[in-house]
Image (cartoon, rainbow, N blue to C red; front, side, top):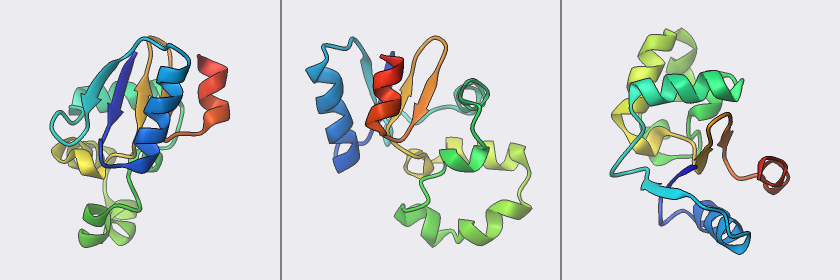
Length: 115
């Protein structure tokens, strides 16, 4: 599994502690420095079954600064994927990616179901 996180994010810290407490094997990837590529994001989106909007960190400073709440509805999927790939801080975190699943955000019950 690959665990995408931002080390200063308290939700990511909580998710990491949860994973470690269960002895889960994962590769950690810092979201800010090694943000997911557009190809990865397209694959994650397809695996997740979630609307693309769920991949945006809607409470992040960057999201607010770019006024994405108003702009996203008018953007094409291609534009949204390109935007997400341009800045890891726009991506909802944490992301946990397995061979056949993607979990967006940390909801303990959903994570427990997959692990």
